[in-house]
Image (cartoon, rainbow, N blue to C red; front, side):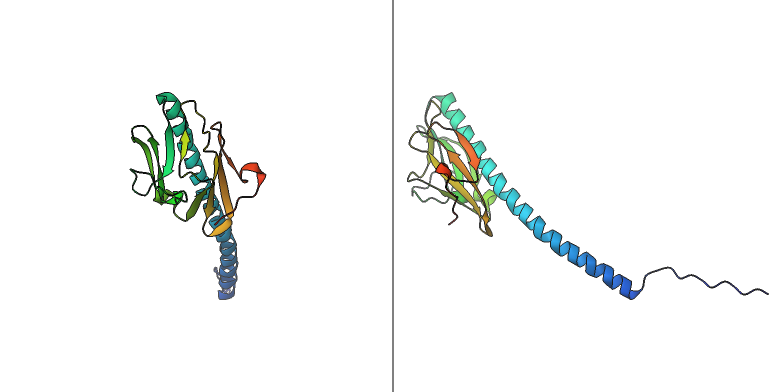
Length: 177
């Protein structure tokens, strides 16, 4: 009678399992940090793009309607905040100045975790019927409250041009509050 060949055991040892889990934990830890930065960067970019879209909408409506249209911070979605240091992260509206008609509303949830500050003394940005923003040229600085190195600037020129930049008008660095 012949002896049975020894059986092969399939599986992993406890040490192999612990090493694999340790490597997986290290890789996930490194990946989550990069992913968190990606999410914060995307949020700041989306807020800048939303502001640009609403500014361009306000400009086109001013030309189309032949009257001044402005974008201003608003906490209630119906009226502008009166102070020049209005917090834009609370939300903003696009409105026709002559009639007070609100064309677009953006509530503060879109700006959660961000601060938005405006340069200049005026509390609003107004576009004239020719599309210019004479007297309302400014920089809107969007900052991530968790990482002040993550910031975007939305620049509005006197001729009404709206653009995004990593620098304030004049080439100076953007500063977060």
